[in-house]
Length: 524
Ligand code: ACM
Image (cartoon, rainbow, N blue to C red; front, side):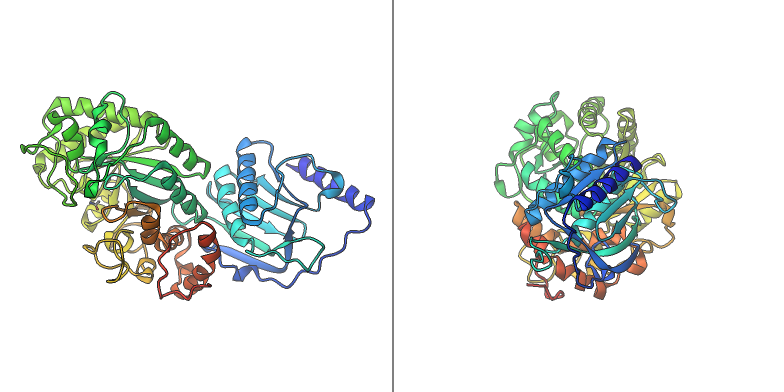
């Protein structure tokens, strides 16, 4: 790194010597500490000057890890998309054209305490994004993207310049797990629709994306050894639409797209309940004793696998093996919720047996909170949605907990009684209610060390395309991004609401159909 920085410094000196003296830019006074960053960083120190992002800016990256160059390219693409500027990455620049550089730097520092920690040093002619890992560098450039103003300044020099406030940011996440879930089973969402959602979540520093790939109304991922799951089970959805599914190649495309954004995909196959579509495809799986037919309504709790048949576990071994082999992340989610027609002892037997299959295929099991009733391993993770006592029991047994309490963080709950989309069984969740709760104290007697993080699920009974998805997800998912990342003392509704209103230019550029709640005075 020093070699490159030294070389660049030399270039700048040579360039300066060979040129008519560069006109000093008189930047307006800035205040980095007032920048509307979401999530809010741990520490921000303003130096009241600026970095001028312009046609002569270059991006340089640490040579020791090619991942840093990928982060540089990602930043360059996003700068082009926002400003139209072409910012080269690691190109040998014309000596007299380099004025300023952004260095994405693999660094070692006492201040970089987690893989996602980063520092941002912004001066007149340089920006350093320091991190120990590529992931941290990626989180750091999201902060930098948010500092680029919407409009260029055309008066400071003879070409447009985007004025980035100067100073220092030191930052790290509160939780290691900051997730969103999308139910692609009740209604199917295309690869492009899912990608758009992931791209927006990455801007707000999410790092997990949970795909709910099967339910009573549809099975959404190709399983080569059991093809009817998609030819039969994939052909239905809520309301009678045509459904759909991802081929394994398409799923891998999503995995890679998310990985480029340092987001891990978590696949979920819901079982032993929520399994009507699977059982319609292969009737031997069925354990509820009823005649099977495709289901396109929105009731829950009527289906179950037969927990006492070996052939069911042979089937599940194939399904989990195939999905695990194309899911590089550490987790496999088995659902486990609302198995109302599975006898309790069968349910417990089932969860314990499936846990072993998940582990055999190299993954840790995640399940909705009901799985805490079984004797699960401490390496399995429990996702709280409705029963706090399940989270408490699981934590006592050593499991980590993901907090997704429906009454606070279910993105499919309506905002208010006038909401066009959504349900209300867990209550209405206006934007301030979504933001005003503390995941660290939400469950009594749950030690902070037991909390892996938070996840915002979006169930799709009432939504079937990006515009409807975005209506429910935004702006609430932006607030959850902050609740997952920022220190408790930095999560202040009044302060957040004034930052959120300044995100309109980004949301509009992304063509996000956010819900314009009257709780926020939007900058329009
Ligand atoms: C759930 O909402 N049934 C997890």
